[in-house]
Image 1 (cartoon, rainbow, N blue to C red):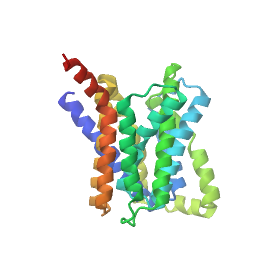
Image 2 (image 1 turned 45 degrees about the horizontal axis):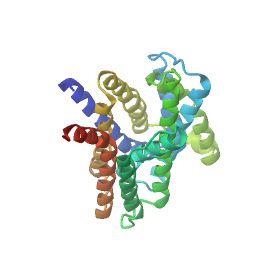
Image 3 (image 1 turned 120 degrees about the vertical axis):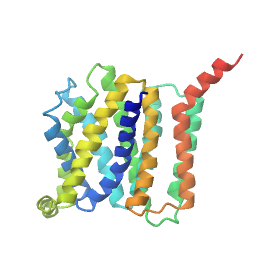
Image 4 (image 1 turned 60 degrees about the vertical axis):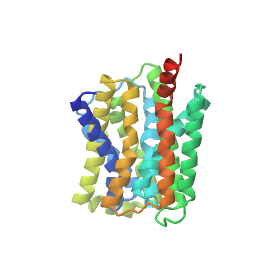
Length: 298
């Protein structure tokens, strides 16, 4: 990877890692459902002027939007409102890699290799350490569970994305932008029944610089710019080179949460974090290591 592209990759890692701190700031001003609805409304309204409509049929777009956009962020924003620290959320959400592998085996009948089974076991063990650690009163069981639900929704969205691509339809930034018109509907309906119309109206009329800045960051920088640069890197380099970059996201998320939100992670949770990262690294690089070892075997 040339120096310019390495710099772009670093921008993506920082943008997506710091994304969780901005989510926390946004949730200080808006309810989870209102933050989700307004975020995707901004993406759809602005992005449609710069990106062409995908050739993906409407039903596939709806499924994609409900899983990746609505499901993932409805669970994630709710988790952060119910006691999931932003830094830990950036790590636990990476459970999507585990769920994606499991769903690929169950739904797509893909073969799983022994090193992947080991990687899943290690990562699950690390998540269990984090989830069972009670010394850190800032994390609740509900918040942890909802973050896992967000990861599973993301994983199901990944499976659907593979199906969309296999049928020859667009599964790129065009789909991300145009499918963003769909999730505001369930987000605002949930806001109406959960928060009430008065709270919804207060959220809208009391929009301030902090809220608008958070929405701008989440929609324009983290989503449009972030995924745009990600697509650019994927178009120039093998997926095996680009995909491991996401391992840096929870590192930035945890460090940023400690600096900007004064979040404290207990010793046992750090142990769990290390174990989860070890499992994710094995899942990402295990195949490459085995291939290299087989080539070196006389």
